[in-house]
Length: 293
Image 1 (cartoon, rainbow, N blue to C red):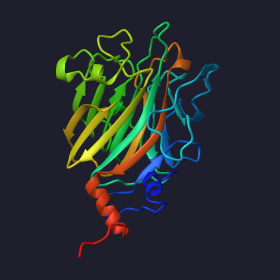
Image 2 (cartoon, helix red, strand yellow; image 1 turned 180 degrees about the vertical axis):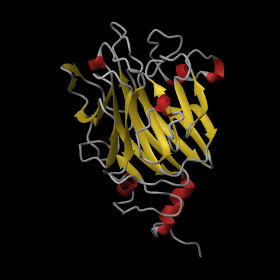
Image 3 (tube, one colour; image 1 turned 90 degrees about the vertical axis):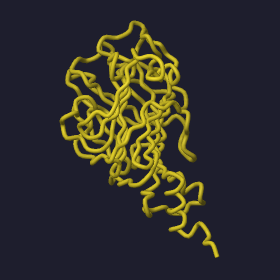
C-alpha cells in the first residue's frame, strides 16, 4: 500500500487524528494489497496487468486507468468476477485495509472502475454492477439489491453496467432503506447517464460499460454525494457514514451470462482522503502546520 499523502508530505507517517481517519491509497499492484476481500462463492478477485490478461482463455487489453496513484505500477489492478459458473447471485467486497480501517468525519472515497461485457452479440444474463460503500461493518458481503432487508450496515449503492434494469440502474441506500435510485429511462435532470457515459449499448441512454468510470463518494456534513465521471448522481442525507469503506462487484441474478469470459470488472486507484477541514486538523496534529502567534 502506497500512502498518497505520505508521498506528498515527504514520507511522513499519517495516522488517525481528530475526524480525519486514516488516509489510504491502494494501487492494487499485487496480491499484497492493503485490503480485505470478502467474497461469496463463485466469485474471484485476481491481481492482473490489465494491459495483457486473459479470462477463460479470451485475451483482453485495457488502457491505463484515469487516476494513477503516484508510485503505483501502470496497468496493474484487481480483476473481479461474479457468478460465472454456479447460477447463484454472488458478490465480492474489497475493503480498505488488510485490517479494515475505520473512517470518520468528512472524507472522500475514490476509485476507477471498468466493467466489461460483449456487444457482438449482446449477451443474455449480462446485467452486473459495481458496488461502493461507506460506514460499513465489513461483515457479510453487500450484494446491493439482495441486501435490502438483509441487515446491511452503512451507506452503500451500485451502478449497473449496461442499464439493464430500466429503473434502479444506480441506487443509494442507508442500511436496509433505499434513499434514491435512478434508471436510464428517466429524462431531464433525473437522468445523468448521458452526461457521465459514452456508450449507448442498445438503450435509450448511455451506459457505463466498456469505459473507465471515475467513482467518487463524498461524505460531508451528514450528506453523501455520489459522482460518476464527475457527474452528480445522488446527494442524500445519511447518519451511517462512520465505518469501513469498500468497493465491489456483483451479479445480482441467478442466471449465468452466456458469455462469462466477457463479464467482469477491473478496479484501480482506491483512495480515501479527508476533506480539507479534516486534513488541516490532521496536519496540525502531526506538527506539519505552524501555530499562529
